[in-house]
Amino acid sequence: MARLPFADDEAERRRVALVRRLGLLDSAPEERFDVFTRLAARITGMPVALLSLVDERRVWFKSAFGLPPGMAEVPRDAGACGLVAALGLEEEAVVIPDARQDPRLATRDLVTGPFGLRFYAGVPVRAPGGEVLAALCVLDRAPHPEPPGLVEGLRDLAAGVATAFRLHEVTDEALRDPLTGLGSRRLLEEALGREAPGRALALLDLDRFRQINEALGHAAGDEVLRLAGAALAAAAPRPAIAARLGADEFAVLGPLAPGEDAAAFGARMRRAIRGVRLPNTPWMRLEAAVGVAAGAGPLMPAADAALYRARRAGGGGVALAGAAAAGGIGSKVALSAALRAALDDPAQLGFVLQPIAPLDDPGRPTGFELLARWRHPALGDVPPDEFIPVAERMGLSLALDHRALRAAADMMARLPPHVLRLSVNVTPSFLAMPGAMERLDAAVAGAPGFDPARLCLELTERVLVQDPALLREVAGRLLARGIGLALDDFGDGQAALGMLAEIPFTSVKLTARLVAPLATPGPAAERAAAIVEAVCAVGARLGFRTVAEGVETEDQARRLRDLGCREAQGWWIGRPAPPAAWAIHG
Image 1 (cartoon, helix red, strand yellow):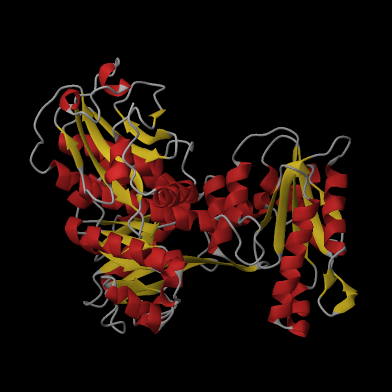
Image 2: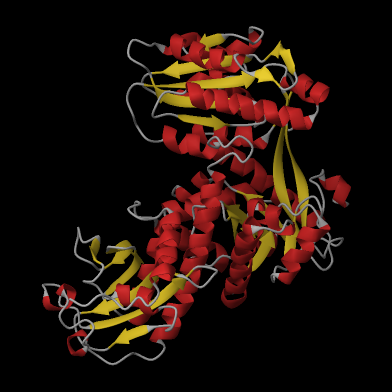
């Protein structure tokens, strides 16, 4: 069989290296890519659609629609997608009306074998430098002429796939802490979600780190964190995950060594921290409070409760999870009980507003986002990223949604005329569980001046990925009432650009993680800019508004305007404040 016509072996080696750098070969199926093959089959009317990655020896299907079960790859010289990789630098599409009549394919197994390929059309998915990363193609077992508009439709989808690849690269960066090189909280949470026997989780909180940072300076503080991370990574058993969770919080998840129990595991991590010598101050010793959980059951809440006990004991010690570990106010169980009480106490649970405004007129908001704030009489201000996950885990999320929607409905009549929308974040349960519209009606019933056209519900990517069919149904019912639907934090890695075509969102909010690098030249800024520009372009075509979150500087705002974004939210527009601060009284 003739070798595929790759003209430049060095260029081909570079192309394969880029494909491997994506980290997608042999990965599990993902909805954010499957949506593109479904759409390709739908818009072309073809029975089979593939998203193929071509390496030095095979054509591997990252996503396959309509293929027989178990068919995940073919040899590189056996399939047609290799032609796209070979000719992609010169041709924008490969269309073969009848493979039996094409000398490049006529003798290949995919044509002569049981599959019986006849019609093929494929387009390249390119890297920013023009290299072919993949092929998006459609196949049929019957020959026929090229349908009108087929290549144009595939090219549009391929552009979306290219953006999804860039988003995947940004997501991969989110799995690593840039300062220490350790894993991130997200990486740890994903690992905890996979069952594995014989594991222990140690959570560590560095003692007196704030004082060290203030005494030695931030540069020295960063070096302390790097040294602590390196010490934990070296002490962690193999295979294990060492992660940085916060400013001075670390975690190690790994198997217990033979004969080792949870106490010994925690002591080993503490010794690693105590062995760190601070820059230019060798007489100072680093110390940490350690909480450890091992065995069956959820490890994170158990280790978290143990860490709280270690802190209360004065730090510098190891506490083990156990029956008594959940008794302190810092445990998630106690926190949920306190939250349950706060839901009925307006003095504890209140709401602030953060403005959303045009980038061309940032001083005149056209919308606000309603944000929950909890001030506990003993704990003080409890951050939303702490109590909202607790509400979801402990079955309090619907009550929290009810409070937020009622507050928005009561506020509606007092909004200035130029404020067109009031956005409310709802938890995944609100839309995913039956009775969403009934819950909405109950929350806003009797509110004077309630206007559904000024209400927008915000949801995270998680709902979109988990059940797009249910979300499509609920979205239709919301839009029929004139209520807006926004996708929040797009770009955090779960939803694909192609999914935006399946749900009739009225707005899409770009995660602050895409906005942050825009004003700093470099590869991260280029990738983020490509994604932002693509989402804005899709929004212009599909009719949804694109709002950039986390805008903090004029430089970011200017770059967003250049990329086609028209609205923003963030400290550059305005910080969250009580309604009265925005002249919303009553």
